Length: 556
Image 1 (tube, rainbow, N blue to C red):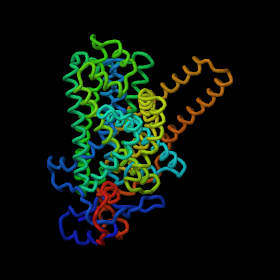
Image 2 (tube, one colour):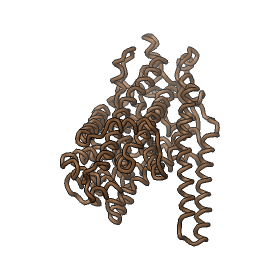
Image 3 (cartoon, one colour):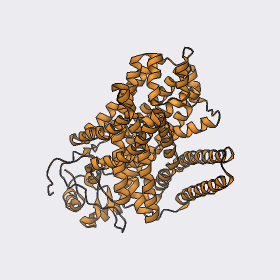
Image 4 (spheres, rainbow, N blue to C red):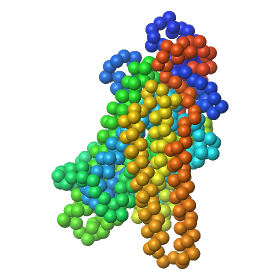
């Protein structure tokens, strides 16, 4: 049975006579800007996932699920686009970027999961509690832009897949994507566990398709290993693709998503239970991200092997010079056979549809966390999807498949440049003693994560500055236009750097509203407090956003 905030005190009085496992895990403090403890949907049957209160490796199965939903963002059509171009232009030379990005992603995603488990609040809610209204609003706008930028490759990728399988024009496929996802979102009514299994099935389907592609392409294993473990960047174009790969791998909306998904589990309310949850979530995320890593490696390896083959005709060589998702299908069909093209289309369709589901969840959590505003999933999906469909449709009609492919690269770079505005708050919050208590990041973890974040931000700023200076020096515009563009561009860079500096150097001011009960004093505080100050996992509002209930509201 669920324990609601307003009924917690009654449950505690009843459980004092029983075992210690009835001790609540969290206490909630009050504040002007704290999130509401009232569930979005007050329902007794939320089909929650309960973790057994025992020390066993079998508990891992109860935590399985969120990692696969998060891993979808690492194998969406945007990743496939950049992977294909990386393999076509540099063969296996950029595989090491995937390895570095995957390792960094595991560390960063684990921090996002820890933040949710320990504090009982997800990243967007922490931002709303921590930052003033102005910066909080800017962070929300940037998060929404990131979600739309993530949705654009999903729209275009699904449209390409429909074109490959059924010869539907790309612009019509773009329109159809607005309806197809609503069908998949209907799966929510059957429970979060079934939805997680379905997403895992799609991930494994994608993996199976590309592993089969490897069998067709037969890349040289020694060259693949060399590209995987020997870092190299040859030319400014390689730097741009490397940034696109980073942007496609480590997505800002994924940090908000993961910190919220972990709140749907009812974990044992003890210090050991919290530590076990953090450890098992890291293991589960590691397994899911390993599958995503192997898929990305397969895509680059197939692209590199095909485009560097000695038996390519002139048309196929021309396709490899500017390879996108649509051209990849024809290329695979010409070089490896029709079955290879169909496998690629099936993987692309599964990737686009599953990515849209997780994007909808991320948008819901972002809006609820930053603004305390809730929308039903289908309304939220249509809102985000319309914002992504409009530019995708315009580009598809005017620029065709080539323009749509270029739009995917632009969207991936936007995600890379927006990453600091989600990553820095996450690093600050998980390194804060006032928010994480005994579960704060160790000095080693803090150093590693800040180094990772600094490298990503440094690469972004370097590429931004060098590309902008190159644009100013090598153009045929009038002097007045160059001066105006220079002033405007450098002002934008200054604002970008100032915003990053603000997030880095601003001290945390808000203590967490949910503190783990790790001392007898805190437990006594809960026993003596009123029923309005107590709270426990799972978060009813998070579960309700995942599962639209079919039963009538009941009073507990």
